[in-house]
Length: 607
Image 1 (cartoon, rainbow, N blue to C red):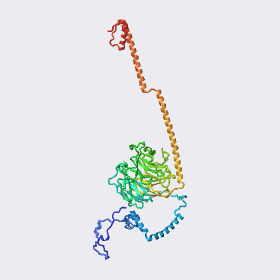
Image 2 (tube, rainbow, N blue to C red):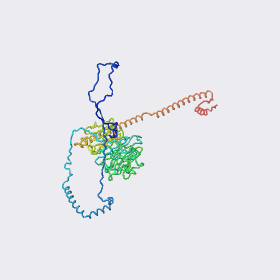
Image 3 (cartoon, helix red, strand yellow):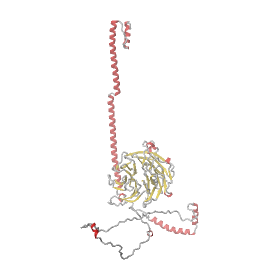
Image 4 (cartoon, one colour):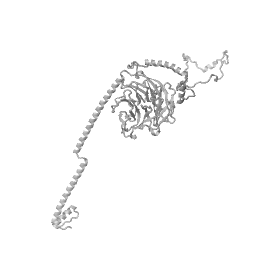
């Protein structure tokens, strides 16, 4: 509703107040009828006059002022010390404790509190108030409620120039906060006036972000540290890696140097399972996977070039867009590339060539999402082009399950953390699809139009109840799905295991059949080549035919020359017998030689 004008003046600013009073009517002008004017008018009989019997209504619009809530918190730190004692100084605190322990009331207070504490400890030892008596029994409330989802909150980019919400990350403790990375991925589409800020939102307060992160370049990805909820790591559009500590402000604590960073935007960054909780690794379209320790960001601790030829050539490397790391497999990780390939890698291999184990091919475009099933790590999900596919590690030729080809491009997807058969996908037409392959395989269980613009990112909360979608215009929508889609069903794990095994076995049979057909085709083609070679040995080639023809031609010429020489010899002998001399001018060289031999024998003279 658009407000045209808002009155904000006080009553005393309108001027002098009007005072009304009653008085009798006064006649000021009296105009008498003039019969001469009747000739100027035409009498109309009958006369139609419309009359509305409804009451006249007036419409007014009123809009109240917008209410903005603000959240404030209190941090409790160590206190109770006198003003002259610094709690950070160990010597002062020890000296003060010794002074208190020598006080007369100290022992009596400790003895009084000790008896109460001993009573509570004995109670806890006698009865465990946190004991679960029915752990093995899983109570599942079966309901016939239709799958549904509803919008809880909408978080909009507060800047005038809207940017795409490229990555979402839930707060690891309680999931009460949502970190959103905003970026513009269009080629040379970054305006000079565009803000570089990314935000942390409180899911209860959509009007204003709780905290602003100020990177030196647009953030493409952002992740909370699962071990320390105050620390976040982000990958920038210019290839740098930075990390923030929310206790130290909006500026990054430390950043990687330009010369040792990625050359392209960092599309994915993941925290590693380590004792220190400071290790992470990142992937970019420059074809590199880099490992980092946030305690020393000057250069990466390790580097891997995604060269499919296993030569480490960066010019032939595959551009990485997505990453997958499962904590139960600390040495394995997977990379989704721009070329539609999934590269399986082993970090602990001895040589860089051995780190690239194998590849899975089946997509026609970049793989925007790659995630292992949280219940069955051998099966993983990929989202690219117009389909989502489920793969098995044992089969590299093709996926074991896949969705139908959609009209809109798929941009992201992930598994449900609580149900092994449920996964989510988002599309460029603003639609969220919820798939349950135990219920339906050809169509999604729930398809929901979230917004009118394209959806680019998706992240599900750890309890599986809430999920957030990021759009092209920077809008993050928080949705709550129905309990049926986020509650583990009876025998669901067993049914999902059976389906995965059945589909894997089917694909193995098809793969063996295809391999057998390829071998037959290869042997058939080799056999046909051998037959062609044998037939070629019986027939003359073009070169052999030309050589033979040339030899026959020269043989014919020599025979003709010998024939002519014999005829000339007979003629010369006839002339010798008749005249005793001969003129050899114009005779051939062979004839002259023959004649010289003959003349020596007959002692003839030659002119």
